Image 1 (cartoon, rainbow, N blue to C red):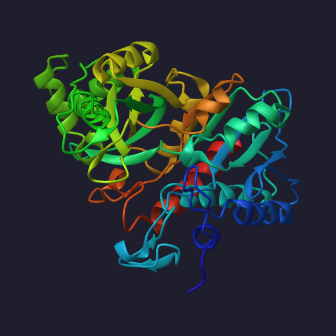
Image 2: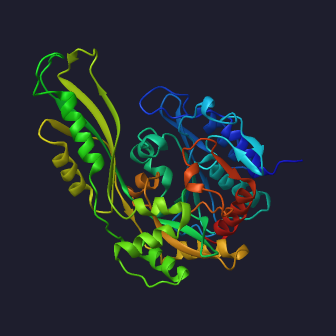
Image 3: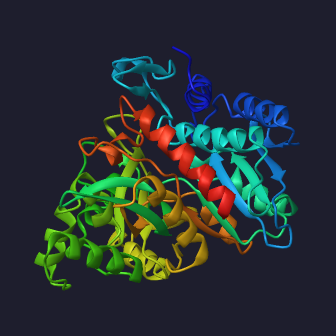
Length: 432
């Protein structure tokens, strides 16, 4: 059976190992960037590859539209993936195996499958002689999985002209479907929590492990981590989250209120995606890494750790102050990687065009906004005035735990979902 363009693109990209190990060495994104550049070049576009560091490659290309007087739209994805370890998987994570109607492998949902969907839509339109409604800046970035400092952040700081006065953008983690009360609902991302990764440094007095010791750096760090991890942040509902929850209440046939029991019931009614929504209703702080000592009978004079904190829009400073308070006097809290939050309007022409594109083939569908608990490269584009939305339309089978596949073992995406999304993107770009 002949593979479609979107399947071939997805499998080819997934077979290129672009694992991002953070500050450690990895394969980089150069090979994937060259693959995409060749594809776009064969379509008649002129992509440019830029490297923040050797191998850490991003690319951009201008696709001219019908109305060149309008500000361009940025269509972007990222080329890196989180690591995958073959011993944990039932398939080769970089084999891009097709089975059960799905493509299996690292990057299937985050986000090489979506990259392929965008590329296939571009290819189909160019082959048909159809131009987008306005200029499109096509961008594929490095390093999204580690804050974008070698990718989108570096690009906007060093090559802002590549984005040519664009005012809006679309990218990953929005537009996928869920089932609520038997109705298909597409979640369109209009918000992102801010990201605040923190380094904790505890200090004490070095000494022998057999002595009574009241100034122990490991104990200070452990106590700080326990307090930060156990802290219950209060629920706070943003305008985006309220829109989503009110829409969910309508579907479930219940009255909306901000009573905690009602909110819990609405979140539960969202099924597997409820965990994502739950995290968007409060700030969070999770200890993730610790390092201390070099011998069991030596009390070290320092210990370090990391906390992954995500803050609601406009609350970065108060979250940091609270974590400093929880850490205590013997532990210094330092900024490691920080990115801003996003809160954008839902009632705008770009969103209306996206909704029209989705409901063309799925007329009974409902589209609601949501706030993503994590982050995307839209945060970096926001620093140069670009309003970035999440729109990667995937019509998913209701039994699939889609949120659980992000960074998960046996990551996979239905081929039918990619085909649907490609056609939606063709309609959207034609009329955006």
